[in-house]
Length: 234
Image 1 (spheres, rainbow, N blue to C red):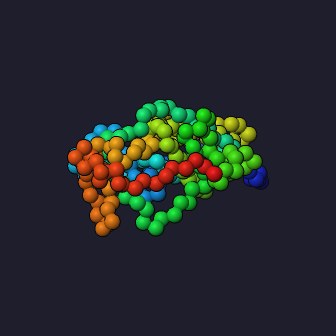
Image 2 (cartoon, rainbow, N blue to C red; image 1 turned 90 degrees about the horizontal axis):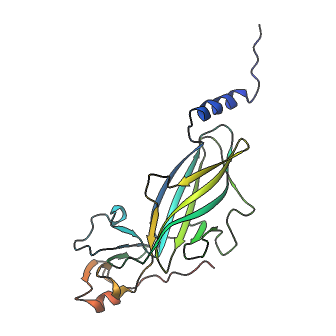
Image 3 (cartoon, rainbow, N blue to C red; image 1 turned 90 degrees about the vertical axis):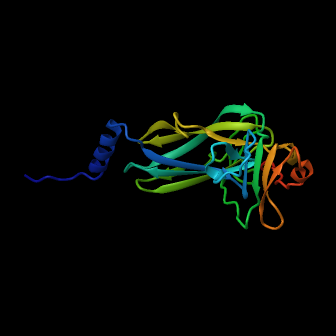
């Protein structure tokens, strides 16, 4: 008896086993942080300098945020990302408790997708105002392949909590991937308020030192803190 292996059967069978056990067709990791530099805000007064503001749950990125989303293909068949929508879960007044501000130290912005959260219907947009990102393009990931999407979000008006809904196509069927998934906190960022309107600041001075200011007692010093002007996408 002669056994023959039909090309494509084993990869298909492998995918079907993973599908039957409801294994994800892509793995996703995400990281959000402030950009440019390190500028974060808390809703309340933080009387002591935070040890690690990037991972302090009291703080969220202010003005601009850069969200890095990494997709890894987990099937032998290609998985395509056809579209993405933005779900705004909450829209709140900007945080004005504590500002933590360190300007950029020579970093550059490598964002490939823009997101204006103040827009009536926020969408992922191609950089430079070239329209919605997924119009006329899609992303394809094969097994083991990594694809990174950098999303630069911005706001001048509110604090936002938001998630991305990615529309995937795998073996002819559409699937939805929510980032971050249900059960995890959403992405969150806030607009700046006028520097003098914060209650507390930790700000970089001209001598390269991080200086604390109680803004009720040193309003002029707080008001002098320079913040980047948040501009809408071009």
